[in-house]
Image (tube, rainbow, N blue to C red):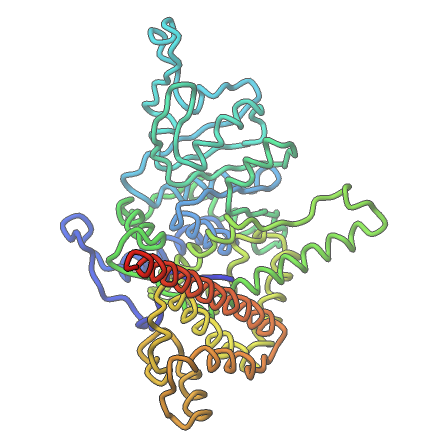
Length: 473
């Protein structure tokens, strides 16, 4: 069952200022506005790529990497360079990949004096290791040996080469490719690029006219922005999004988190059904099923917080959840995005029309109460009518008072009352029914643990009394 460390009851806007005003004197709202204006500036320079640009800013805010795929001459390099040009105070590493290159091209040359002594150590100055941004053009032209060496650097942000272990400064790498090369190594590399976009040529005459206009002015080079965003401000936003800064918390209600997981699960189901239909008559081994790893699903929480923060909100809404395709689909592939939007609308319509979201909220609150009981058995010693101060929702308290007339019951009856509440709970949808089953199983385990502990304590008490009785004879 999904759990959530984020809190509820958010305000609608952010007014809190930075903890270090001498370094970052702006509010989060002001930085969000600067990021929005930067995205608009790039959209005016790189015409017709607004969705990819928004996706790229989400990659920057979450500190993840992005892969741009397209045919030659569509403007991948220009887009990446224009994005990086919007920031000040960040080093940019650029490289054109080729099969002849060795890892030294990315990590820096080997220290020859140390190499004579058998020590493998790179001089990382000016390399990808010591750069905040990176652009790798035609990444799949690199040989597998080099790509394998890049894995730790991209994922763990750490150079691991022999005895040389060094933290890397990398924040975001944008890679570009004209094609996908499928192998065990390239699949691992693709997994490091959480955000993927396919940029198709736009042959619309008006769009071609706008592109030609921009080329006449800038000659295919990135334009100098009217103002640059200090990289420190991006890092500050990143610290909020990833939960490492206690100054501001981006909140998501447990029921919305559960809703998001339902949408993602339904999308995974639809993608695999479409795959099976497209490979009808073929053995399952001839194609790979679409799979969303727990790691990717967990990182989607950062995307939700980034989308909220970009809109200067301290809470996640269903609007943010509807854009999770930035991670789970390839932007620029209409079929994938349409499937995600279908999943979102199907789950949302089902739950909203049936009051399912409120039921999910109630069951998740009940689940929280059970977890609290698991940690603190004394909660069961309280009259249930006093549980309004615990995480349990008003729905349960109202049920209890309607059922028992508001009279506080004894400790011995609390368990039966909790079991009765779940037994009488009627799910409105299949999704709620599945959640109810999970809560029932948790409740059974909790009470079994309590019974086991009580039996153990009783046995210890009996043995202690026997010992005391024997010593007194």
